[in-house]
Image (cartoon, rainbow, N blue to C red; front, side, top):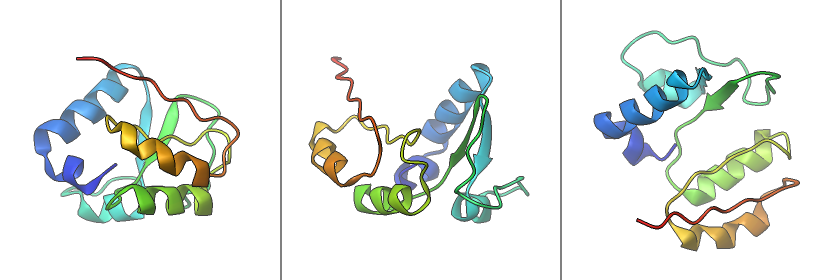
Length: 107
């Protein structure tokens, strides 16, 4: 997640609440764990792949760091970048994964 989302308490709460409502167990990465005001059960490795409704979330400064994180720790098939910025698509060609999906959302 982008650091601006983390620092926007309403956006952070909305994102995590929506995932939890859908039954997704969230596991903060090392950086996110260090920023949380409470002790959270963080992941021991960002390489962990879950076989159920679970995901690791980490804080990044931008798309370049997100791509680097995915290429370093990702599974190459179940990694996700969620964005409303269509310009981010240019970076999908630098991500090592088997499938890239982009959904346009019109407001």
